Amino acid sequence: MKKFNYLLGLLMAVSFFACDEEIVTYEEDAIDFQTADAYIKVVTEANELVEGQSDYSFRFIMIPGVEDIAKVNVYKKFIMGGTQEETNEVLAYSYDIDDTQLSTNIEESFRMSDLVEGIEVTDPESVLDTIVDSLVSGTICIMRFEVLRSDGSAANTTDEDAKEMRFTYLPNPFKGTYVVTYSDYWRIERQCIDPGPCPVSDLPIDWVGETRIIGALNDTALTKGDFWGPNDFAWDGEMIFYVGVNDATNPTDSSLRLTIPTEINGEPAPVFSGSRILTVEADGCGAAGSFNHNRVPGQCDVMVVPDAGGPGVHRIYLTYGYFSDGSGEREFYEILQKIGD
Image (cartoon, rainbow, N blue to C red; front, side, top):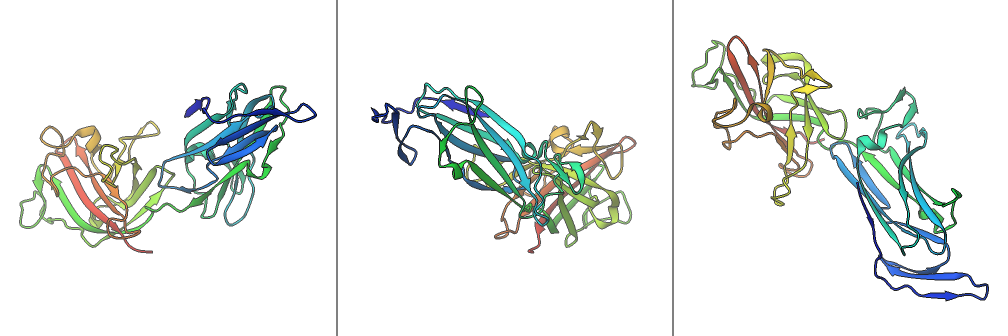
């Protein structure tokens, strides 16, 4: 969370009505008015919540006027898409205001999991947590701003209708059906592709053309269930991986990093076979790591590239595997491309 309190260095003129009421003139951030009442400007008026996107922010400006303003509270509630059920309202943030300054500028960063914390719904009768299955397209989060004086009473503010902002929930863009466009499998240091040698008689393995379902648990967690590698390796579990952010040092790179956890809620991550899951982060990539083979394009890819095949046609690159104590590594590499809706 970032909070900035500063004198904006803008024009302020003080004059008096016949009733000796002080007037403040404010000209900044597209606000140009004279007021004695407090004024709150919600700069972020509306936005979209996307399940596969992790980081959001809002910003507002508090101008005390001549009021004795001490605090701004921000409350949150949801109106559920479909049923239009209205949830409870919860205090989300509280900010102290220094009314000796002409204005206070607040910028808050948050994740969608922060928004649903403390929110209750009656159907189903549960408290929403980081799993947002109860949210459907069209669900709205309303954030309401309350301005308080030092005695705790609600202050008069200009533009009362502007003291809220809305975030509309949209489906995760990365959820959906994908087709495998490239596959590679290494078993105990040997590549199982034709005509390469492989220590299992019914291989090589090639699962190009097979489809996979990518699901979502929340704004950072995606799932790939039913298969570990090819259809031959069917299982009744699901792999979980987390969507990160793009490389800030390379602004032309639109890819988002993926992380495959080795533990989930303090327990080992589920694995198709063997003793434990192998991941690029935990076990290394290249000559010094378990994933030490040259792949296309010669690196261990774990990422999603939005719109790689055109608008809405996302591409997911996964490198993962498992280790068997009795024999060694099994390594998988696959590229999946989303099939259009």
